[in-house]
Length: 382
View (cartoon, rainbow, N blue to C red):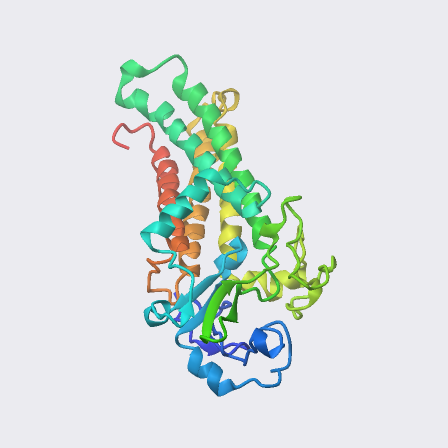
């Protein structure tokens, strides 16, 4: 492991963090008043929608109303891939009658609301949703497979004809194939991160006579808003021209053409950007691991596995791919955890993505152990 990443000031006036000093930062905190914003009453655009400050703007008044340490937009690379936007609000601001803030997402009410959305809304057009669904169903198949190959050993009376070889082998092939498909979608999601700075929040001054400030969700250009096709682009901001369809270089992340869909990044983009992104490396490890692991799923099919009569053939074509593929899952899960951490040695227990990476890591260890113990499958103790 490297030394913890030293925070540095971003071009938006905030601080950036990351687990590795030799890779790109993964977290940025940007204060709302990093550059002056004009209120709607001044006739000027909000922050991020114009260049000038606007006549009548009073920076001292803005700083007095909304300090940088009180409200910050938190940009995470994982959230950017998933089309989410986080905002940091200190309790004093959230409980103040002077500010209109959204409810905390870690409250019981909001958690239950999120679970209800998960059970009632099916955004099949969203590649991030498909990634989650595909891996969920793949995991279900592997649980079923475990019963086929383990239950007869634990309770022989439950075994039916060819349960381990046929039912176990076919379900292993299906599970491995689903994981491979999910890993492809994961890579597609990774290379189509939003290339422009999309923080998802804006500030309005409402009820001007009372001087209230409202933090509201802002229109964003993530692809998740497009319901017409999987690989389409997100909606343009209200009042702005349609997004260009050409790919802008990484050196111009805020240009109008920066948000579009690509199937493969260029070699220059790989070298200068993607191979320095923790999230991309995690997705790449997952895909490599799933591809190698799929070999064991293919060789688990009865017509193939029945012909692996020698120990060397079983070890090379069936058990070894499980160990190598499982190692890829371990690396992937670890990197997904680290991506959400401000320092490599500080777990991010309060971030949902950290727990997703942690359970992926545990699953990867299980897949690896399954293959490792398979080398000694002739030994009853193993």
